[in-house]
Length: 474
Image (cartoon, rainbow, N blue to C red; front, side, top):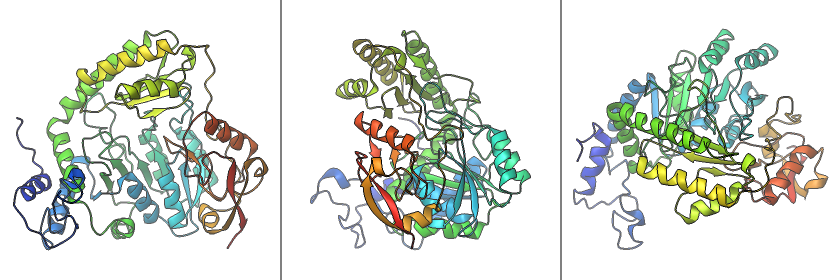
């Protein structure tokens, strides 16, 4: 057994489980599995669980400071509500209602709803689009510079890095460009908690000069689901405002189990991150090489400056195999994948993987593709991501969110103002943003996606037969 991690919160969680405590506090199961079974096993509150009511704030602060030091942040908080909460914290931490911010069109739904909560008015900057998957890539520095020149009133810049398929931006260049305009750069790095902790990995966003970083400890690191970190340097962001923004939408009863897992993941990353990440990088490199031998299979690859070397993405269009059918076969074998659409399979490989997990998956994927081969086809890119294709914004997202809506047949919604978010999921990138004028191109693409079996998330009607539109602004 390995040496215990230097993770005080995790050790306190373990001590509580074996302490024989007889609590008269929440949660209502009182640590017993007698009533509802093992589903509540290990569920420990932070307050009066991992630590006493009086001591918990100081214990948590110490763990957050340790994480801040590891990433080079001077403000750090642990969230039990995922990067969703972190993104919304950052939206609430910049500007005033009505202020303009620049943001990649590839924002996650969570940040878009953060703009709704904060009353911000986003101006979209189009990302590049990956040719293999049709999904978004990075934001070119010159494109951001052009947008900042056109919108000198912008209060902040929001980008995603790495993107869902691991595509990266020049974050250092984006930071220099934002700072030249005297605005902060805020990076949704939900998929990049591992960046900067191995020589073959690019630096994390703060090391590249970004002002804030939101990351999911449960994606690339071995933390509990919903675990996230929100970090900032406060030269351009106000510390008190960050605190208020964080607390505004965070629970007052945080799970000690989730919090402790963040501390454990931080300690593991500090102690063994380079070794474990080196193994993951090597496993993905071997998998990419093996998959590249399969005729027609496109494997996303590139230097670390352009692509996360731990991300495994394959394009199926050249094989004729359908991603949904491949996913079904893999599921039957116990191999769940992060994303499967018509043309793409995305598999998440982390420091928890070994050759015993990755190699059988790769062989199963190859066997499935060979069984399901058909006629080669063209990749269908996401129509709402192409440069110049951003729909007209008639209302801000907040105005449209609070407006009066009605459902109309989608073929009759062209030219109407969208009242809801629509996002094929994963990856959760909004195809329809509240306040935008709906176009035939986007609606046709979404109906076709729904007909192919794509999960169209957040829409009131996931079949896209109808769509919510604004009838009256309040």
